[in-house]
Image 1 (cartoon, rainbow, N blue to C red):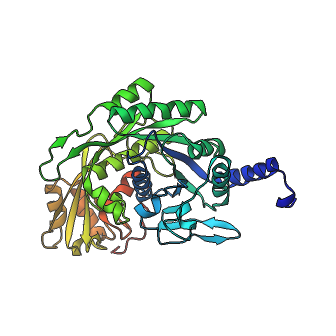
Image 2: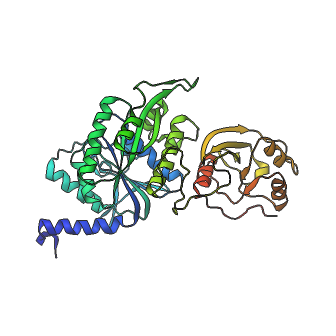
Length: 411
């Protein structure tokens, strides 16, 4: 039946079939909501997507804000135009694991105003969802405008199996709007994974002093009152604003700042909740296969050593510029430090790393004799790791998604 001869009802039914077929390849679909603007919802959506991708998950990020799309600018993709194949929109690639699509990438002018209302907006959003050619994904994150208008309502009623995460700040005025969002979710039968409290205090980067600029405890109270999980509390960090303005989410920066750690903890909680487990902050990450990565001593602090050269994994541990030591507790990075290695002589590095408290070393290649030395000191050896940033390697190891290749120094 040709489209021009189809009734409106038949056209919508065809769209629904296309949407179901495409999104059937997506394991988890999450709508990011907020009761009001200015709480950092889009920043949370962008950084959560980047953090999931960094942990090894295949992620799609969709911006359905027709009037003020901000995701492309936060990711530095606003100059890229969407491409098409067989009449369908191909998402823009941000990284190997993260694909992005936004109405802005379809516009001819960045500052073009879209003046749509009611049925026209609903039809455009449904068409937008149906036209995107997503590949198989672990997560599809959808960023919508604040409030409970046409965009989130259309998403909730169109995408099967979608769930919501609600972003708030500790302020009471924000929390009052959050309760409206929760009631909205209940009304349209949209399950809520939990709350994220953004702008949760300011931590001075110089002295570590915390100042609760917008108050404190609001997220916990709202979660307790509504029976929802508080997934994480993300502190204010000016660097998030600066990196967002440069088109780089904070998680693309290899550091151990409080806001970065909070986003990584959010990944743990979201993955756990999506796999039917307790979504408490600090839950260990779940691998993209859905099974928990088990390590001895998950409840204790573990130190992981990674040889590094020029900011990436050094192919051979004995010829690295430095070692980066990551302190890991409950399967999350809590701190890191960089140390120059001692001279490379047989048995010296294993003894030195043991004295530093290391219990795991992740390397690109290592000979059998060296592996024997590390074993004598009780240090677990992981070899064949890819040449990536050390922090990304450790996060993948903790998430159970580290793909080890061939031992390039097996002698």
